[in-house]
Image (cartoon, rainbow, N blue to C red; front, side, top):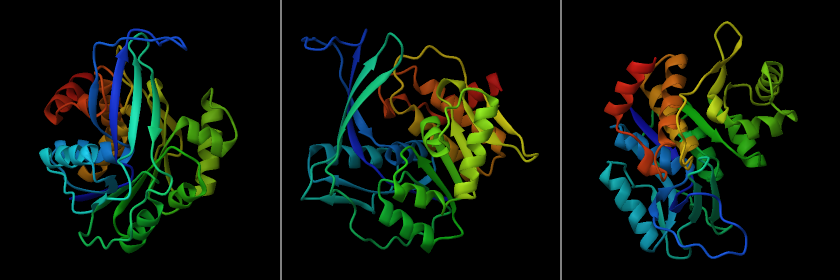
Length: 298
């Protein structure tokens, strides 16, 4: 199976703190964690680390951060044939405050507004395509060029071009915030969750998965019911990248041909376990560890 991931590549700098800092203060920190990031970027890294034949299409700057991102991909076997290196832009970067007290993270991301891939021919015949909506032109082109590929979108923002991509894929895997904005209703119980599913299905006409953070995720079963798949209860110290890791693990399960309940339990587990470590890619567990824990808790 060949998987093509298209979207955002960034370089993350995470600073763990014991509690969130007060405004207008100076704070000395003891730790700094650096690694590549980005929704589709992290998913591609996970898939490569787990042994999937993975290609990443995105853009970085011709600088130190861009070089490090390329090196990270090569270490886990991700093909970088379609990772463009721009001499006109600097690599997108994210600065993250990870609050150990409650596991939350606060992210400041810089990406030039005109930083997008130039047109490219991708001729690898992917079996699965994952997009995060941040390279809409290339994503639309690939989804049109390879209609038989299983297609997934990590839908986090409700911009017009992302909603257009949602109508082109087999699976819209979206955040609770995305579902609430599309449906116009706060999700707080089973009825509001079911309403959100109906609104998303009416607009996108495809299969929907809604991530519910620590509560797990929800999907519509073959019998037509909306069911919540609970997550693993853990002590969170940093939620950076947890959503990206969920989407990467979801894509892994789809590529393996697993039934949806198993795909979602495995993705929940990957996302939950990741919050017990600092950093995004640093918190992706080995596949063997994942399978061992999955078999213990299922």
